[in-house]
Image (tube, rainbow, N blue to C red; front, side):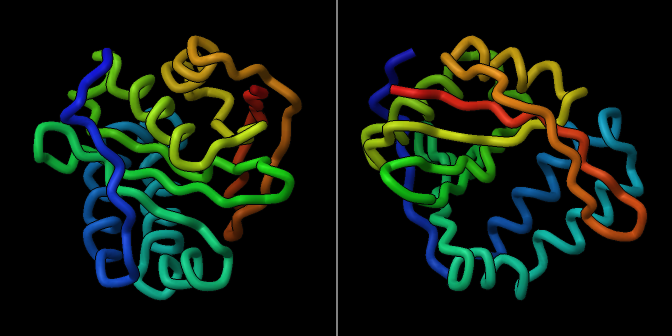
Length: 165
């Protein structure tokens, strides 16, 4: 899908409440079957509160973008420039009803025009089959498997995937 009405709009710290609101909607529909409701609640509380989002932007250098299609905000993403044009795709979230229509692929292409990466890395839950297949379809390969302790007994069991230009 090449859609001229699709755009990525840079987020400022003034927009972080909207990021938190979008995350709550998207995560509540997508993640409970994958990681369970308790872990979803824990992660939303800890990763998408005002202070955490400010830290992600100001201290961790994450660049957030709203995903806008036909003048409607339908999701968001964030990236971090790690080094030598290697970027970490920290987040890529779309409303579930927008998935499977080519929008995600168009978003990745638009993002590549903005950041001009040589390499993109990301982590994805090993049970998140829809997302894993989406990344495979878009040229990503599994690089390794990793587990991350995120506190209170919760573990992220992820694939690390990479795309190389």
